Image (cartoon, rainbow, N blue to C red; front, side, top):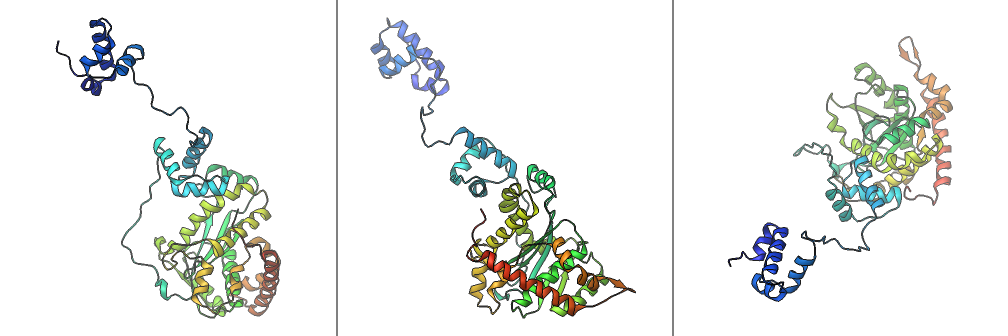
Length: 393
C-alpha cells in the first residue's frame, strides 16, 4: 500500500492529513500503534486526528496578563485615526491627555494589526539652511506669523466645535526668535493690521526693556494682518518701528518655506496644546492661563532638536550664549489683544489715526504708557509665576 507521508500532506492541508490518519486507522483494525508506525507519526498525533476536529486548534494563549484591554486598544485606534499620529507621537499624546503610559512598540503593533492608515507628507530634500544658526545672536532674527485656530484642517472636529461653543479666541499671534526658539504669543478674536502693528510693538518694547540692544529683524508673510503686500504700508510701518530699531522683511509670494521655523511651532501647538487643553477651557481666562503655561513650557522646559539647538531648551540655549540680555525676557505674558486695546486705546488711537493722509506720531506718550503697563505686567507675572514654572499638564 503506497501512502504519501503524513507531513507532506499536512503542508498542503491539515484537514486532508487527518482524514488520511482516520482511513489508515480504520484499515488497520483501529490499531493506534500500527497506524502511527505506518504514517511515521506519534500515537498522540493519531489520537488527536481521530478524536479531535479536523481543523488546527488556535494557538492563541488562554491567558495573557500583559495584554492591553480591548477598551484601551480601541482608544489607541480611535486616537490614531482622529489625530493622524504614528506610534511615537501617539505614545506621548496619550500620556499627556489621559495619563496612560504605553510603549511605542505596543502602539506600533496595534496600529499594524488593525491596518490603521498613516498620513504622508511631502518634503523637499537637499535645501540650504535658512540661517547661519551658529553665528546668530539671540533676539536679533525673528519670524512672525498668525494661526487661525478654526482652520478646520489641523485639529479634530470636536476641538473646533468646543472653541466655537465657548467663544474662545480664534487667532494666535506668534513671534519666535530664530537663535534660541523663544516664543512670544498673543491671542485675539479678530485679525486686523491694527492688532498686527500692536503685537509687533508690544514684543519690541518688551525686548528693549530687557536689554536687547541689537537691531531686530522680523521676517513675516504678506498677510492682510501685516502689510498685505503693500510697499507703501511697509515703508510706513518700518518708519514708525525704526524708533525701536525694528525692521520688517516680508517674504516673497509663494515662499512659505522661508517661514519653516514658526510653521513647525504651529504644528507643535496643535499636537501638544490645542488637541489636549482646548477642550478643558470654558472661558477665555482659562484659555489664556493655559496658553501662558504652554508658552512657559515651550521656553523653559521643552527641548528642541532643530538646527543649532542640539536638544536644548530655549532657556538653556540662551544661557549657553552668555548674552547680556535679562533672563526675565522669557516671562513675556500671554495676552488677549482686545484687552490690551481697551487699556491703551486712547494713546494707540492717537498713534495710529490718519490725518490728511499722514500718521500723527505721539511716540513718547504711547511708549511711556506702554512701558508703565509692561512694568506692571512684568511685576504681576513674576509674582504669579515665581516658583510655579512647570510642565503644562
